Length: 174
Image (cartoon, rainbow, N blue to C red; front, side):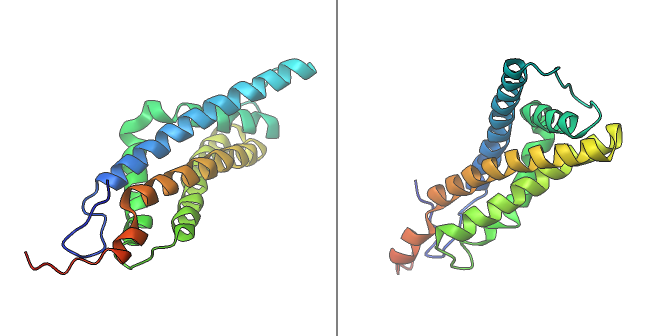
């Protein structure tokens, strides 16, 4: 479903942005949960003590970032509107500017994901357990955010389809 707006290259409405923001938050939830499960599995296999949420140290920060990412979808009343606004102010404006290449959409979504997710996890990690925990939470949260952001940018690009809109010229008056 490609959205046209009277011949102008546009996202038509905010629905593509809303769906992309919802997918980004769901992606953070799923990637964080799978990452946390894999981290716990690796800890068990190599015989390390389990590192929990807000434990001090870099490894505790990584666990904190993954656990906060896994809880992302439970706070959807906050995270979805925040992602919606961030996407609307970045990749949501690209179709209006005539940007049709896929790379800028993926790049900006991959930049926004680590800023939103990594910044949030770093803030909570540093405020509760210190600098090393905040650094680990920043690393894991930014990684989860980057992966989710790439998927989100690709989804938005596929819904809006700006390259097809540039080729499909509509000169009708009404």
